[in-house]
Image (cartoon, rainbow, N blue to C red; front, side, top):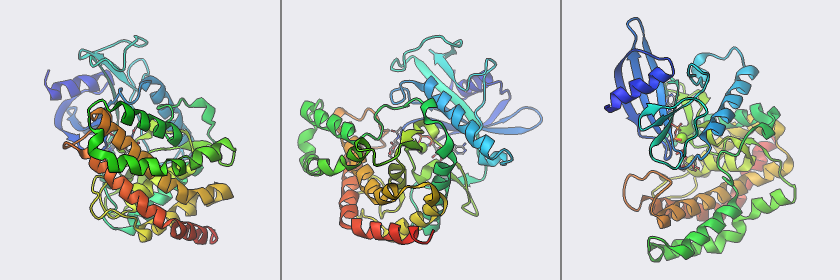
Amino acid sequence: MDEKEKLAYILKQFRIDGEILVYRWIPSGHINTAYYVALYNGKEMYQFLVQRVNTYVFRDPVGMMRNIELLTEHVRKAEPKMEKRRRLHFRHTQDRRNYIVLQDGVAMGPDEPFDPLDERYEFWRVYNFIEYSKSFETSEGNPEVLRMSGKAFGKFLRQLSDFDASQLIESIPHFHDTAYRLKAFFEAVAADPCGRASACQKEIQAIRDNADFGCTLCRQIERGELPIRVTHNDTKTNNILFDMDTLDPLVIIDLDTCMPGLACYDFGDTIRFAACTAEEDQPEGMGLDLELMKAYTEGYLSEARSILTENELESLATGAAVITLELASRFLLDYLVGDKYFRIDYEDQNLKRAQAQLKLFQDMMLHMDDMKQIIRSIASKH
Ligand code: ADP
Ligand code: GN1
Ligand code: MG
């Protein structure tokens, strides 16, 4: 079976027939594998997003798909008249599953057990392709991209503020538990399974020097100072689809990591990814862009200010620095263990990513007071 036949076979399991006219791999995202597929059924053309879930990363993909079903249903009920282009609609199989599992290329029946770490099994899902949309791999220096992203993620947080978080599983345990992440990082440094630690002593030391600060939010959680909410946990601008012309944010995608978490990690992750001066793997020229950060804060607080507590407001800037440090440790850990988690396009990309995040982290620490001042000033207007 070639790739095209395989995609047709997968679509068929979701009761979608037709001749595949066009398909292409979408090279965005570090985790899953996504394809755009257009089919013709003799009458009309249909377009879908066909995606293989990375089960090395998501060890309970069935539980994760249940999370996504609950969340998309909640958002649909909140805005029942929302046009199709502004929502994710996952296709179902005959027996009402929003996923299939292939074993050696053949679809398995419902409830058959499978091992997420065994290469013979593949976990697939299919949903509506949002036409005439684009997502941003960088802000392109455009404050509107940040403002619109802030609005989208701020609204998302508000919409899910009345969702019962206890219904959700943790799709990745300890996902933004920075203390746990740092501990895992230092264990990888000690084990050094690929003999790479000597190549990144400076970076390891930088993480060691800032590990105590990295645990700030964990300590606040322990003291009960920050509410646990349903958060997205991966708020990059490439996880929003915008209208290609107007930049209107149509829909938030990549709901795989939606689970209980802190608002400030979500706020901070967009700042990390897009309110900066270089790409995620470019240490040269990397720094914080306060104008872009301000635009994001304006959009975000216009939607989320009303639900945020004073402690949460105060934590937003810290969240940006902590998540940047956390991700530096995750990228460097992956480099140390031989690039098992994040997809890489070239050797040492995870090292470059870690270096870029550390540079950004240091710049955020230098501008911590500026970020806090910007947040306070915007919050006072709402
Ligand atoms: P990953 O977990 O690998 O980041 P995503 O779900 O974010 O996977 O999808 C990867 C990319 O595919 C997105 O950044 C976006 O560009 C594109 N994409 C995802 N879903 C859709 C969709 N429904 N319509 C159009 N493009 C999409
Ligand atoms: C991954 O899947 P993607 O590319 O949207 C990762 C995030 C990181 C991000 C860094 C499930 O996100 O946690 O912040 O890369 N997702 C997962 O770009 O680990
Ligand atoms: Mg993504």
